[in-house]
Length: 288
Image (cartoon, rainbow, N blue to C red; front, side, top):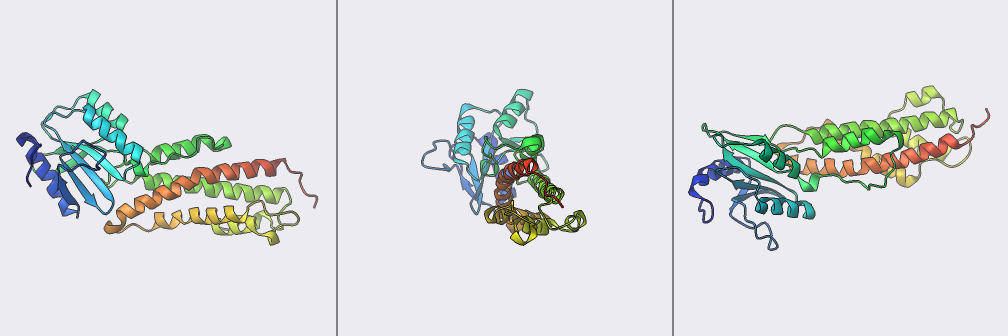
C-alpha cells in the first residue's frame, strides 16, 4: 500500500484494518475521493458491490469539521456506506468525542497490539435509515411504531454480528399482523363476515389478508381491504421469510437492503389499517 497524505504514524493502523477487510472480500482504494463532488479523501475506501466502508485513521481520535462535512454529505445523498475513525488501542477517547460520533452516526474501530480489530462504536448507514412520512397517523400504535423505527435506525455495524434491524423488522411484522387480526375480529363482531371467531382464530396471516379482501367472505357490502392493500400486505408479509432464513455471507449486504425496503412499508400499512379499523368501528353492527 502506498500512501501520500496519510501520516506515517497512522499508516500501520490503516494497513491492519485494510488487511482485515480484504480477508472478507472488500476491495481497497487508498486515499480516494468518494465522489467528484467531495474534496474529503478518507485514508481508504473498502468496497464490496455497491456497499462502501470509509476509514479515516487518526493518532488522536477527533471529530473534525472535515469528517462532519463528509458524514453530512453521505447522509444527504443516502449513500450505502459506513464511516469510521480507526485508532490504536492506546489512544485517548473522551466522552465528548464518543457523544459526537454517536450523534453523527460515525463509527470507531480500535486496532489492538495483537493485530486484532474491534468496533468500539457502531456507525449508521444512511441508505439503511428509514424515515416514513411524518404525517402518517398510527393512532394508538404510535409509541410501538416509533420504538420499532428507533431500534431499526440505531447504529448497527456491518462488521459486527449484531442484527438490530432484523429484530426491529420482526417487531414491525408482529405489529402489522396483529392489527390485521384485530381488524378481522372486529369485522366478525360487526357481523360483516360470514365467518365465526373460531374461523378467524384458525387462520394464519396469509389467510386473514385474503379473507378481508375477498368479496365472497362478506355477508353484505364491499371488502374493507382493497386489492392494492392486499398486494402490499402480502409483499410486506414476505419479510417473514427473510427473517426465518439466515443470509449467506455473500448475501448479507443485499439482505440488509431488503430489510430496509420492508421496514419502509410497515408504518404506511399500519396507518392504512388504523384508518380502516376506525372507520369499521363507526359502522353499525349487522343484525343476525
